[in-house]
Amino acid sequence: MGKSRIKNPMMKNFLDALVAVLAGNAIYFLVMPHLPAVARHALFKEDWGLLVDFAICTVIFAAVKFARRHERYKDEE
Image 1: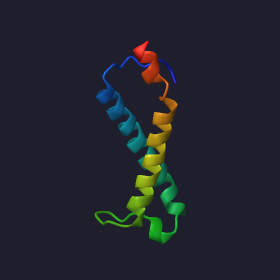
Image 2: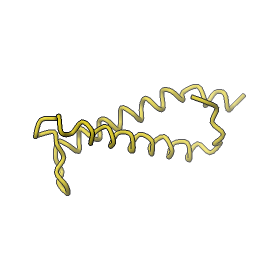
Image 3: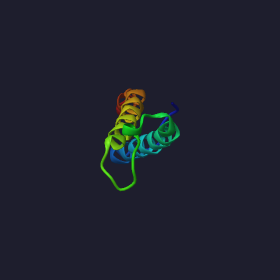
């Protein structure tokens, strides 16, 4: 990734979470028709589909944080 010009750590965290949620939901809804019925989310219900969606978003968030792990040390220099 390129150099980040955002200095506020809270804003960086918000943007990382936003990217993870948007990308995770896009991936989930693209893959959802191919998932078993139990892993598909039904609107306005708590089900296993929510857990699958959450897991995808969490993995993406962890990947973004892993990719940015050295930025913290570069900003301090």
